[in-house]
Length: 173
Image (cartoon, rainbow, N blue to C red; front, side, top):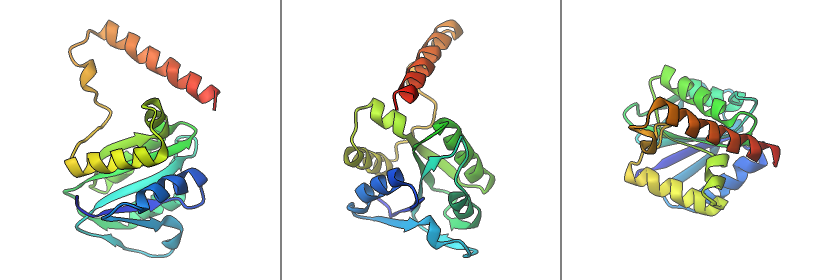
């Protein structure tokens, strides 16, 4: 696998737990977002970028936005976004992907704590799975192959069930 540089929000415990699981792996470099408050260009060439943060009501924390705005990286690579919780995780993913897209970068792999827990993965197992998928070039954007070919009525039924499960998950947290 190519080198992976992970920028993370070091003020959040959940982000630090995931980064600790990532830091033990080879070809992974973890950088605190709080180390770059005044740095104008942030260089991370010839590698994939990972953003690890906790959603703040569907918004990306300012320290991560600052990284995105000042980042100089490969525009041909597909980068990774991991949201480790917070309110409106999926809005946070969408916001971060849109910010990356405005700068000309592509998000190829997106993950949320909810989806990782739904697969019953612990933090270390989730980090290993993410690194394996990144090394294989697997992209998991919100397009799901299991929904192809379904009628609109059946698709709505599946999506309503997913929303119901997500709401129940958030209530029990």
